[in-house]
Amino acid sequence: MVIKKINTAVFISGTGSNLLNLIKFSLKKKSKIKISLIVSNNPKAKGLDYSRKYKIKKEIIKFNNKKKAEKKILLNLKKNKIKLICLAGFLKILSKDFIKSFEGMIINIHPSLLPKYKGLNTHQRVIENKEKYSGCTVHFVNSKLDAGKIILQKKIKILKNETSVSLAKKVLKQEHRLYPKAIIKITSNL
Ligand code: GRF
Image (cartoon, rainbow, N blue to C red; front, side, top):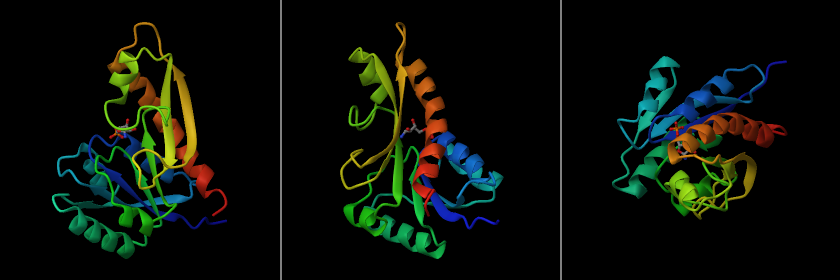
């Protein structure tokens, strides 16, 4: 049976290791998504290299004027029949209106056990607070920062001499396992 894949856009701002991981996942026969567009607010994002390598369209949009930027993105999403948006290290906050027009179909990965440690510099704050556990979360995006309904979460133990760098590495590895699982979960009955 041929699975009709869901046209998906991945939004990035930097390295794009989650993007690469999602591309690899999307290429699996069983996967229900096809990554048709990469959006970046940062023209220097390393993750943009995957556009050429995997022949995926890219759109670089500066966010100096958010309203204009979002309008342009929405047009392109429509043109490419995008049905799912995966935020993966995307550092801009999308407006309420933008989120509304894709309600329930924008998801994000965050490197903490939400609702704890929303926002940036999570690993550093986790270490400073001497937490025993951290982890990562995939959640639906709503108009509040890192506050939408949780789809899946993975908890990891923090070791005695853990630093924010070693923790980031460990969490990222788990992120790469969790994001595809979360996508499978939300697309299983589509
Ligand atoms: C990840 O830790 C993600 O959870 C956070 O930003 C980082 C992006 O890494 N939102 P990458 O660009 O996917 O490598």
